[in-house]
Amino acid sequence: MVTFPDPFDDPPWAMQLAVQVEKAAPPVHGAVCEAAAMAVVRLLTDPRSTEPEGEWHARVRRWESGRIRKVARRARGVRWREAQELPGVTVDHDGARVRAFVPGPVDEVPPQLAKLQVAGLDLVREESKPPPEPPYAALALNPGVTMSTGKSAAQSGHAAQLLLRQGSRRDVAAWLAAGARVHLADDVPWRECVRQATAVVRDGGFTEVPPGTMTAIAWLVTGRR
Image (cartoon, rainbow, N blue to C red; front, side, top):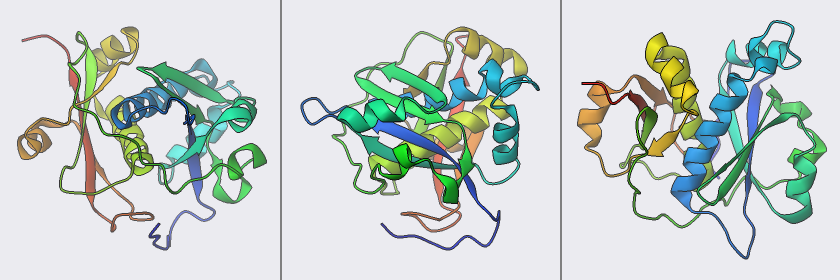
């Protein structure tokens, strides 16, 4: 894995993501990206994050005040079960299971997560499936940038988070009420979608891609004309 130094945000904070990857039945790339995005959104909209008295509120606010780093790790068997003991939100989606954890300093990662592998998470990439009924969030990853599944999952989480914060209140409320569904659209005209996207992710450049690389975009599909 290629890494780049970070001159800002000391000490850096990150949201850890764990992807369950069992040898017998591993998930596919697209489902993991969608599940990661949904897990991030559900954690950020959980009352424990949104309410001032919530137990996650202060940590989420501290993290969002800096760079919104995310680190995707893979887990299986007993290590996946151990990770479930930590505060977070798990999403089961289309054969994929991803847990988003409450953010914290990168130099204080709990041992249940620290021993999970970061590099090498690259899964089978299947053809895009039909989208769900609106409202849902559409995500697209830059087809001109090579990223592992782990990196793609983190970028999908970034895009969904920015969409949550930057989308219109009415449309975001409808999306959340419908379950915050996400669709990875990998067969769309990239340049046209970039012009119309609500959320655009430009990577900080700490792993896999250079700083400033446009990695992912997102927009809400409401079904209204």
